[in-house]
Structure formats: C-alpha cells, structure tokens
Length: 352
Image 1: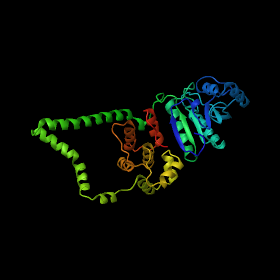
Image 2: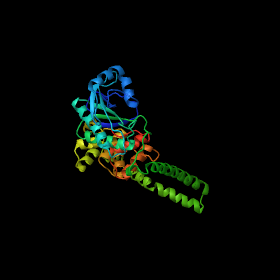
Image 3: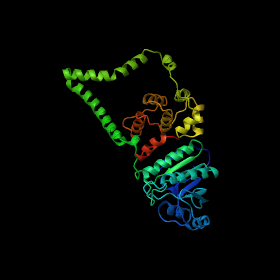
Image 4: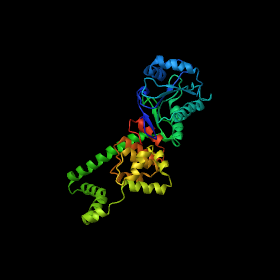
C-alpha cells in the first residue's frame, strides 16, 4: 500500500508483479540478463526492453548484493534487483548471503524513503535454496528490521502449499487441528445423545444418570442466570465490567511493555493503536484483538476474557481459533510464526 506510515509484515499469496508497493524486489541474475521464474515475470510486466537497458548500465551484481532501477510499468516506484545464493548444501555462505539480500534491500528502502516493499521468497526457485530455511531467514531479518522502522513489508508466496513449515513449534499442528475437530464433533454428538437418552429412558436408572449429567453440565450457567434474575436492571447495568480497551490498557500497564513494543509485536500500525487507545468503546476486529493478546503473551484464560469484552469468542469448530489455541497452549507468542501457520492453513493472518 502506497502512502501513509505503516508497520507490519504481511504474508500474501499473489503474483508479485500484481502487488502494489513502493518497491518490488526481484531475484536477479548476476549478469544484465533475465532468465525464468520471478526474474522473467518482473521484466515482462515492467517492460523488458526498457528494464534491460537500465539493468545493463549497472553491470554485474555480486551475490548478496543489490542494485536499483525504475519500476517502469509495474505499480511501484523502484525495482531492487538482488542476487541470491545457489544452494550448495549450506556450508558455502548461503545463509549469510541470503540474509544480506533481505537486509540490503530493506536498508535501501529506508534510503529511498519507501513506505512499502514486496519480496518474493528469494533463491528458492532455480537456485534451489530450501524453502523452509529461506522462509526462516526472511521472517527473522524482516522482523528485526521492523522493530526499528515503520514500513509495510510484503512477503509474496505464489502458492501457500509450496513450502512446509518445520521445527518444534510446528510439530503436530495438523494433528492438533484434526483432533480438535473430532473432539468438537464428539462433544456435540454426546450432548445430543444425553438429551435423546433422557427423553427415551424416562425414569429408568440410565435415564436418571443421564439427567444428572445434563443438570451438572448446566449448573454453572443456571446459577449465573439465577443470580442475575434476583437483581434489578439498574444493578445489572452498574455491574458492567471494563471494556476491551480499558482491560487492554490495564494489561499493557501490568506487562511493563511500552506502546510501541506492544503494537510492533502485534503486527499492527501506530495509527490503529492510537485509535484504540483513544476510544474506550473501540470494537476491534478479531484478528486485531487476538494479535494484541498474543503480543501481551496472555494465558489462554486471560486471552478469552479479553476477547469476550469485545464480544469475540473462540470456537472449537474454527481452524483459525484452534491454531491460536495451539500456539498459546505451547506458550509460543511470535506473531510471525503464528501467521505462517495460519497462512499455510488458508486462514486470515494476525495484525492490521
């Protein structure tokens, strides 16, 4: 997005030549020519003849280095050409060179006063850099940069299923999702069986047992309803607890974090956070509320309490909600890691 100050990392599935940003990053050939993949697509979309003429003025680009040209017909101001490393097993400086591609591109974006930059997953095409390792380098380098700069950074993945998430934090997430869908279905069926069994069994021993289980399951709810029923309406209204915004600011104060630390960790921009801080009755989007809870590293209980104050509930039948629960239960509070998992499973990512 051009214009305005933004702060976030957005993982999107798209053709990078269709992305609107101040800067488009190209995975370039070292020599002034273009071959296949992202490189060819960018040349053709920008206008191959004009771009190649400009590129020839630069000459050879070293591995891990960058060069800048106009963007011509792309919906951008500049193209940063960067040469990624060929994968040779990981012991030939590939990791440092790939990090350099991202770091130098980001530093140049600051120099060019850009508000947004779009990266492909550099070196994962014909250079065969393992996609999970390339993804890890991209995310860590971009995150480190965003802690000190205001910018929107797009990581453009043409196919979200073209890479696999790896590492301990991701182990078991697919089975966790499946198990919770099964558990949710069983719970639903169990309650239905209880109700049907009670109706069909009458006053039999089995019927009495089922009735006791149903009553036990609803006893807490009934007691809450009973206590409210004994109160006047004015008393009920006067017992209203803190709003989402009030509770959020209280949690931030208790955390010892500064406002910038919170909104950066939550992957939301400063303007949105300022709006939340100034409006006691602010109603956030679900992904924004969850991102703030993650940034504050709340327990699952505290997170659900905070969300409830905005009228938001987590459901065991929602893949998005189950993924959030998975990471919170594991005490993993890195929004980028969570967003990678959400993206892989076709869910909306956290943040702005």
